[in-house]
Image (cartoon, rainbow, N blue to C red; front, side, top):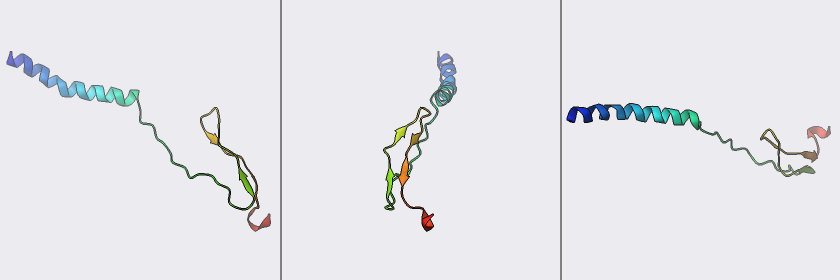
Amino acid sequence: MKQHHAEHARWIPCLTFAFSLALHFAYPPISVHAASPITPSGLNTQVSAPANLPSGKVQYDITGGTRPGGE
């Protein structure tokens, strides 16, 4: 009986590793990028509210303002 129990106990680390490996590939880590907020610069710029695009990206429309050097 002890030998039978020892055989099962030997498989526990292998099965634990295989299960954790399967979970890793089934649910890969999600990376979240922290971005600086987009705000008006004080040069008569207007920044629209963020718009979520179908691709999952966020778009801001920036209008007005003055270019450096008055260009």
